[in-house]
Image (cartoon, rainbow, N blue to C red; front, side, top):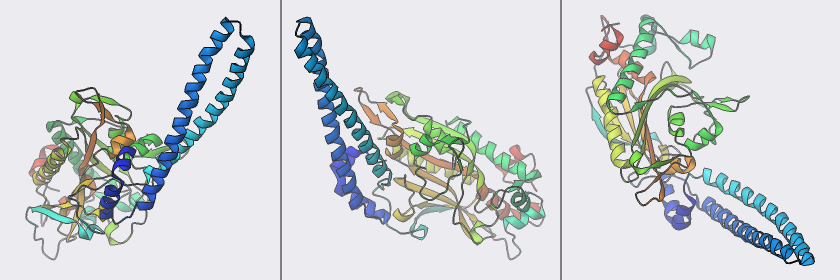
Amino acid sequence: MLEIARIRENKDQIIEALKVRNIDVTDKMNDILDADAKWRESLTQLQEVEAESNKIAKEIGKLFAQGKQEEAQKAKEQTAVLKEKEKSLKESVNELSNSLQTLLYEIPNVPNPSVPAGNSDEDNEVVDEWGTIPDLGEKAKPHWDLAADYDLIDFEVGVKVTGAGFPFYKGKGARLQRSLINFFLDEARDAGYQEIIAPFLVNEASGYGTGQLPDKEGQMYHAQNDDFYLIPTAEVPLTNMYRNVILNENDLPIKLTGYTPCFRREAGSYGKDVRGLNRLHQFDKVEIVRIEHPDKSYEVLSEMVNYVKSLLEKLELPYRTLRLCGGDLTFTSSLTFDLEVYSAAQDKWLEVSSISNFETFQANRLKLRYKTADKKKALAHTLNGSALALPRIMAALLENNQTADGIKIPEVLVPYTGFDTI
């Protein structure tokens, strides 16, 4: 959520910057500033009434002590009138504050100046590529066929037990999945991230804190009886650990990692792009989260991108890095880099990680601040990234490493799997 002070001071610049997202927020900005003016006016009136009421309350005691009963009684009557007015103004201030908050929730984050213009993922900017795309020949099989041939993943049983997008991993498929999780967690630990086992459900305040709510696209699963939400990523519980927290400057940086299943309705998804592991409703992911000083967050973003690249290189998966254009940027992000691996049998790139800097956007919602050296409070910057999401990593590993003798396991995973070939 953008800070209201920033909007007051930089309305025109924000409107212009958000055009990179292909939106015009001029009317919404005017509505926000109108609501802000009304809120501040009501707040000033409330403060004046409270001050007057407190002043008269102090005088009442003096009047009684001086034996001025009639004047004291009139003052009490005046106080009663002021209390009613104070009550009405408090209700108005709270109502206007909630209306202003609702309007602010509708404005996405301001893109970093380096974000390219564009309408969709087709306009994302390729930053670099690594690795050699394997030539598997015409007999190469997609991962869903390989999973069936080697009895690794059962999609049909998943449909029977739950529904489409909820596969069962079996035997060596389950061991490979678990091995990837452990490998990613160990790598994150060695890179200085503290491992956290977090809840898989969060409350509404947490959803608002990191920007998943309000859920305009209906992508979150909602447990209505308890008003809990199944997490779409570990970013939500990990970042919300610091909701309403004031850190000391020397507490920064904070580096967290966690493995969780992720739950996404993926409403509107259909066609060949959802086949097999390409798009699931439940999938496993290891996340990395950073809470940083604003002066260092973009340096840290580059560090996080390079870290995720190192994981892909150790897995020997060809990848490319994309800088997302304005039209493909998520609501909360200021700058995002996607990493995609090449799926040789499907002959296409598959996104396996998004690494983003949210600047103060989440921190403002979370009220996540730190004390500066001169004891002032400032909003921290938050960042996160997939390190890594497993389904498409699994798909690429199976497809790219298929041979006539079976599926070769990358050397770095053998100590985790206990086998080098499926």
